[in-house]
Image (tube, rainbow, N blue to C red; front, side, top):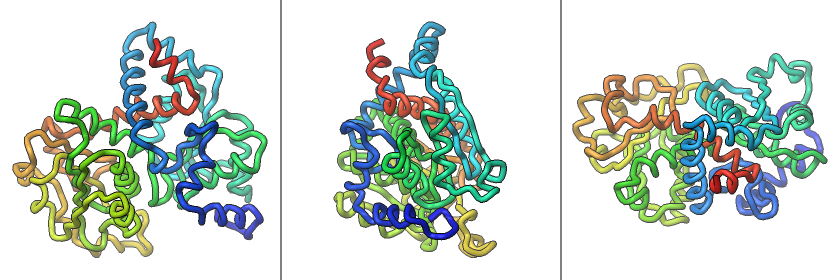
Length: 359
């Protein structure tokens, strides 16, 4: 509930929210195809492979003036709203530039205190206002499931639905980060048999890290995957994700004593920071010792020669900056891939992907 008195929309959304994922996902489709990008579970192997090819094609076309002009002509008649009610650097900038790559004009609100919400306007009315002026809403919010609520509202209670893309929702989901992460993994393992059969080590604040949650959900699309969750017990992955992996017969191992013990098993190492912005009380995270879950020059000797190291950023001290020049460090490439993969997603949602692939 966005806040304030409970409304009939709150009650109706609560009913929708209680439906199984398979039922809710249908609300985010149009004519059997993805219309909104809300949760990682919407992405199957076919969509991921299609988006991988579209991403590579957009990147290739954009290297030339002729190709760039073509790509920019595809959505030059569309406008996007970037509604970021939570701080962002990479996600905001990559989405903004992804829109510009496709010729879209952008508007933005990066602080609700400068919008009519500060005057008491409801979240629902704000979203309907955004859809009045734009053709796409890309949003980040500190509240759980707020992007889902936005898409549900526009698709079921308005005469002007526009696609909604989730750019991060509370500590629950960040599906477009998972999309660019999978692209980076596929790219990195292209000449090593692909992503199938690899072991992914995820380390850090897994309990509150929406990136690792969304990436975990996508592992169901690849064969023979194994996941290692390395974190102090207080920051370990939540039961809902572990249950999901069990239902899809994806083996996972939980390590709570330190990173060194499992580094040598990983084909990909996905580091994350401690998400202390979600602390219930100030300083709560600092009570847990996470020093044994840092990647340093010393323990890099345990990492496989062909492994890849990733991080969604921002980082603190969980990856030593001295590791940056190592060819296994893919996090800067991962960051760049965000713009290209998000452009591919927008192109897919607006159904201009066939034109891109046929060029």
